[in-house]
Image (tube, rainbow, N blue to C red; front, side, top):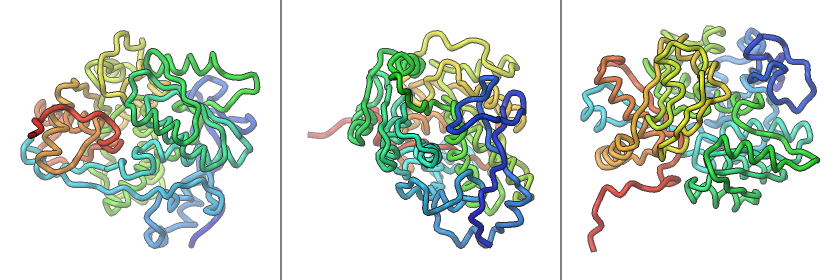
Length: 397
């Protein structure tokens, strides 16, 4: 039943629902909101069944009918595998919870979940003739963009904070990107990118300011569904800076639900942020539909969540409300403790953002927002080796 047709029908403004009528390559909508790719899901269901899907290689592009570029011969790929679900029984027992598993995105090319979005975005941009790309980044998105741009023969420019983890900065440069270090966090990097843009321009791959990174991140949700036998966990904890993955997974779940492929209810989605930068948490706790004001004083070393006001804030909050989920902020001390404990107890090295998710799980257990029998997935968004390791042990000499 394999089918090489493209089932994407149009781009839709996430704010107004209007069909987008612009020319490729695509940025945001005319209303200044993220664009979403829509599909003929009835045609997808007629062209693909679960058995045919299961027979394909365990890689990102197995889901080509759910993506806007179906031709396996034309994709820009670095061999993106289906990432494993790793049980954390020791920490689950220590915290008094039920089954807790980590979706380990550190197994992807360049060691983070950013590979998913960049694989799709660079593939689509190459198909329409784009030759130069740029991105403001906390680190991992720039490294991934640089790698996929190199694979596609594109020039790449990365704007990264001065205090970004050294390995991600060097990684982007190693792949041939021009790297600009900026005083400030990702919003300052975005401003520097605009100010530095040459007259000839480059394509802006900022989070949700083009429609295809979200489609790549959507594959996390497709994988979760398939790995669970088309039954989803009770709750998903996701580190939320720009929130592309949370939005993308919710989009995937809705698409699968519309096709009748899922058994049981959809999961509760939980946005995990820091007490030092928690604009989504603050908006959710206030019952708002968007972040009212950017976070003023950012004070956290969890780099992946240092976003003062996400461009997709309305879509993040919409997913939380629709799923009956919530938002949680944890502090850096909790993150370091959870990271060290998980490594010692379960032998699993979480990145800071993944540890934040496990700390949020512990908090939610403690205050009763989730039950002790709930099946939970936490997202380990990158290899723990991409961030400085906490000094929580003594080295014997």
